[in-house]
Length: 465
Image (cartoon, rainbow, N blue to C red):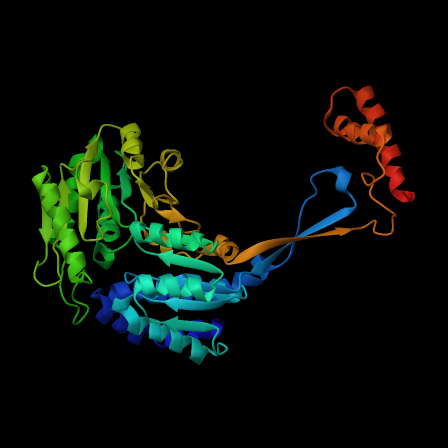
């Protein structure tokens, strides 16, 4: 894995260029959102794997089991199937491939059709780094075909990143085989700007979190709830920053936002904008062309729950603003969603921000930042509700790649029997009931008497039945 990390660093420019050509994102987005996280996770997971996967002694639940030593071990599933998306074609699969292999599994990786060259690059990196032949198999097939093929072939677990609709279909198919799944699905992620926030930072953060990767991120900031005391200042700051955005083809690192990845995505984003405008939203600011696969960076105000932009995954460079009266209304609006992938709270008062964050229904909540926790290998990734099932990344990611097995050893293995073994009589019953009273009852003398009965019953362990 460390060799893999070094090879990623060596090829960083060419990998970023390949990702940019395959997806339309800028090379800066490709490097910061895909290549750099890839190098980090290779090193990080290799460093923590021995500790996370080591056998762990379990604390005893009761003195009754003082002679039992329980050890929790992690057992690989066998073969892990991974179906990864096109929006982060390098970073997302590596977050799953690397822990899977370090845990002792083999991997079948199916990448999205639009980014097949990136999948081939991952396979070549693994070969160059010295992975055993066949440990990582990169396959190309249509999405539906690949799911059926993996399940029919007998994979032991399936990881899928994509739309909520596709995730539901995959879960139903996997259920027929009793194959467990981890689903990282859609999002319509909220950002809360409180009236004591640093508005310059909040506006800059909203713009990056909403427009990086041309907004094609499941955890992008899509709906922004601004407390009334911060409304005018935040709106003005954001509008000014949008006017300076450069949207276009990345020729010489001279643009900020690239294109959408496909015609289908362009149609979807255009429809979301048209729906919002039809239902009363207004454009605060726009920047960039609308030709080809490009879509203008757009900020809307006057948004409400009837608009697709406020209740469906947008997956494009649109941010919708809604004014709220106070933090209570902001929390209510933020949680009013089928999704629950990520969220953010912006405030200069960290105690207040943590209080609000603790009430948000999301798998990842950041304070005075947004989206970037996906690049932090140590933080679990996954969501509530329609945003998915299970977690990847970090120590929880290793747990998803393995099954727990407990081994219970008996220190008194030379004793003829346990005290609750046959034959049974009233003294055994009273002795075990005495254990409950002695350990959990009330009254000193009552507990002492019960302890005596327990000791007498325990001593039968050293006599033959």
